Image (tube, rainbow over all chains, first blue to last red; front, side, top):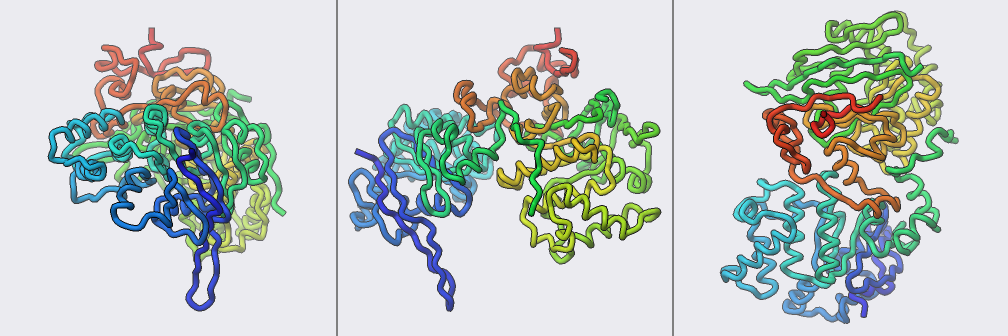
Amino acid sequence: MAVLEVKNLNKIYEVGLFVRRHIHAVKNVNFTVEKGEIVSLVGESGSGKTTTAKMILRLEKPTSGDIIVEGINVWKDIKNVEDRKNYYRKVHAVFQDPFASYNQFYPIDRILHQALKLIGVDPQNPKSQELIEEALVHVGLEPKNILGKYPHQLSGGEKQRIMIARCWLLKPSLIIADEPVSMIDASSRGGIIKLFERLRDETGTSIIFITHDMGLAYYISNRILIMYLGEIVEEGTPDEIISNPKHFYTKNLIGSIPTLYKKWEDIGELEKRA
Amino acid sequence: MKDTLILSLENVRSYYAKGNYYVKAVDGVSFNIFKGEVVGIVGESGSGKSTLSNVMIMNIKKPLNFIEGKVILNVGANFLELNTLPRQELQKIIWGRETSIVPQSAMNALMPTKKIRDFISDLVKDHFERALNEEEIIERAKQRFTDVGLSPNDIYRYPFELSGGMRQRAVIAMATLLNPRLLICDEPTSALDVANQKLVLKTLEQLRKREIVESIVFITHDIATVRQIATRMVVMYAGKIVENSPVEDIIKDPLHPYSRGLLLSVVTPEPEIKKRGISFIPGTPPDLANPPIGCRFHPRCPYKMDICEKEEPPLKKVDTNREVACFLFNK
């Protein structure tokens, strides 16, 4: 059974006070995510990829359509606090800005303790310390250099790793990673990407990877969905997408991304603007 | 004509004064740029790339200090030692005519209430009080706008009427009005989407092909982008050059461990990437106020030897046209 099923999902925003305008941010989106699969949503700003993620995370109510996570209809079956808690045990998010994910007044231990509470482990329990240290080691951090520190004392890469350490504690069935490395230095990006791969391979977690970077999507995904103006316009394995793009938007995108091992053939020509 | 020297830096040191200590942003840098070359300068943030671009045209403003070294520029008839000239002289005879720079985010620094045409006439007034007719320059600007793929009438527009990619090309057109010998671009593609990045790269390639400029220096952290037009790549780390190699060589076989780490952390949609895998450089770049003793990369280097902690590896020729600063190649 699919971990996530999205059926006919729509989101229409109404803007304007006197003159109403409708923005169709997500149009009839359908897709599934299987267990242990990384699916990338690729698209430019405003293509609806983050809105889709927000609806899955229950941060934004869909206008119509269904989101089903492991048999539970996210917007219809979740009624009380207990249901919500259960849901967030299953579905976890890693956001773009590691600086915004932390409360600067508390040491970073707090964010890990919260995760422990969610799975019903008392953070005062000596066993919890073990769990935390194990999770930190999993993401390549030295617990004694991290615990007790405040967010401003850590680098962006370290903060993002701690968010992933939370995933190791919770072992959710689905992670929604919204541009998780776009604010990280290129030289440390590779490390974070590998952590997502390990999560998939070692715990069977499914991941929705939202990015505008086709290179990243190509490297990490099992499947890529291309979003353009709110619709999924193309779907396929990474190799299918880059070797044989079908939609004009995808073709354009693939043709413009600089490649490392091959020099563009058309670099010498400059089209004149009409 | 690959042997005509355009710019030569000899052991240049340029530090930022901060109270009672220095931040060594450019520390002992030597390299040459020849006619027809597009030199890509790559490195992480804080490696001294942008400072180096200012040093190349001797735009030294406090707190930046020029400590020592020589900056030698070909001005046609002879070579000038730029570091001996006063600022006013540089402004009058060098900047804009012999060398030109497109600073980082120049496209976002255009004042929104002024038309592009007014920027051009300000430029003329500020830099070239004599012998330049404004009308003539406007005509020339229109021509140059066409050259970079814009419409000549775009010079009567306000900056906000142009898209990001168009603005960047407009800035490049303005910087090359007087056909400078050397064009220096600092991160010209970083704020643009991929389609516009490609247009800017094509524009630069055109300028060089048609010999409007003789050489280009392209400063960036994005290796895959610069790779498309550069003929040579200079890799900077912590204020020093660690490798200087022709592009095809460095892509195929990076020598310095830092260059290797940098290249292996690039992900592009290419089958080669999946084959070679993806890697990262542990740790963070050093504080340039107090850089590590010995090789500056040794705390992050996977191939560290004893000597690396004590001595600084000099930039040495390892092949006919490759230079690297690493004891692995210094036998």
